[in-house]
Image 1 (cartoon, rainbow, N blue to C red):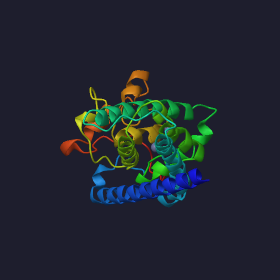
Image 2 (image 1 turned 120 degrees about the vertical axis):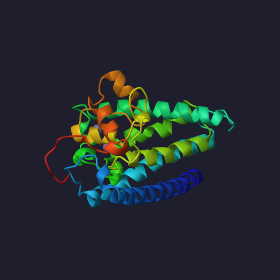
Image 3 (image 1 turned 90 degrees about the vertical axis):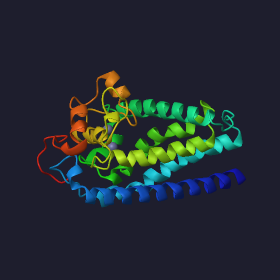
Length: 257
Ligand SMILES: [Zn+2]
Ligand SMILES: [Zn+2]
């Protein structure tokens, strides 16, 4: 019973922190998007579904918080691998390994979610063809569970210090929302060939086409598996410098989704 109360206490803390980071990140992008309308990725498609998207956020946040809290809890109870002491090398190294592992996890879970048998769990997330910063939490319980189970499992595989896991979760939260912002604010050569980082255009093209760009932080798996959008590099380049957005992501008709 005490265990359950301890876990629920931790879950409450995690969920509260996730909501705080979500609101701050969301407001930041709302302001940035309003200030820079020229950075809109899908020029002729405006998403007016943000309140509908937000209605799904409690289920998504509760699920991801439970997975993450379980990982931390298992580590604190000594059920998992004994984490390394946090040092100048163990912290960055385990964080980097975990980010790379999560990217692989996300890619393959995402490919699975696009299969005939599993798409029913992912269809909700794809209702927004032009995503908004709030689309990140517009997902079903099953999809959130499949994606976020990583944080419940990784502590049994990698001796990552809890502080690094918290850093990764914050990064994951912010970058997940960045990927759905709908506006490319941080276009840079680091996001295209030969560099492996993904950008907002990257995930935006996934929503726009349904069949490319399944990765999260890196474009590595998509390049390797041949699922990278053929115009990804060129579109991202068009948002750099003064040419901002001269080439749209998708030549779609004007609809509000
Ligand atoms: Zn998808
Ligand atoms: Zn998405």
